[in-house]
Image (cartoon, rainbow, N blue to C red; front, side, top):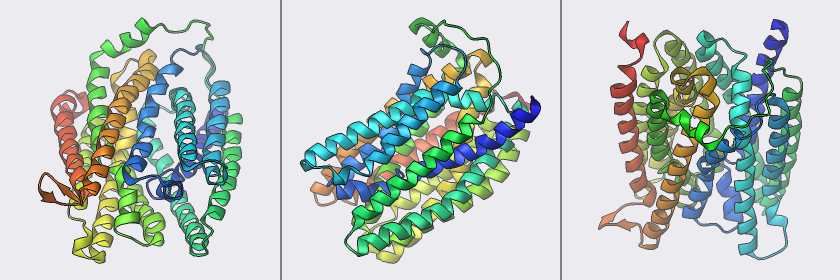
Length: 426
């Protein structure tokens, strides 16, 4: 059976890579191409980007599903959400008014993420159960590295596709190619799960009640980790969703730079950081590692506060390069740390529930933050890039919030988690 587990761990790496490639089509570099085609404003595009955070709420639904095998549910929901993602890039071809298309797009992306996040906790628990606890840091860093290397090449190809067809005045053709590419990725992604195994669990028809679900949240460890999720979601959702339109519509940075070069240098930075941070987390702790990463993330947002068209085009290239490098380093530890902190602090039988609840609560707060700042971005732009008497671009202003909450997250982890972690007190 160990041989089957080993094969499944390899397939998990491939599954994560294919899923990551699909996500690139809805990242801050490519999504603005589609929303611009549909006539959606910068602020609204940022809010739509943050729907990803709101989707975490739907993870709670997974806790009401019958306990037992995760594979059939995860496979079905994954196919469904990826088909919807594919259709989103075909909306420009739909007949109907601009408003109708925008409504269809928003409903579609919300539904896709709903299905994704219902399946996500069960999928994570399915595959992570195949990995020894003392190997989680190394494994998750290796998984991320492979995804990121693949993403570099993939982003360059997609950058060329969208640039080529936009220059010819046929950007919709690029959208068709994107949709077909997602279809192929979906088929490969489905096959990785079909041929993976899961550890046998006793099958039960019992579904958790509301009381049992929120009983999980009474656990002190889960509460401590939930606050970390919240602080980080506020930091990232106040800033990141609005940077893609800033590069495209305000700074006018070249496609090769926005879509290909920036993700590439960020990925390289993240790969190097993942190797170092994964080993560091296994030796020290995920709490100590993520505190460092939050500090670096704060520096990445700080770079955007110094980025403005008034400083010249070169300034945009330099500051966004610096932002992406620092953010890549930070994300080399943050993503895996947040999941692993849940696994460190929650009881084994409550891990799925802890991950779902913490991501759901922080996701709602993150989305509300993005919605609020989306309105603020549009208002600042309508006022001629002026806010409370200060002449500055909206994205510079919201980046300040990213700096503040990244620092708060760092201090919180140092005070409430690092000191309590036994490995940090040896």
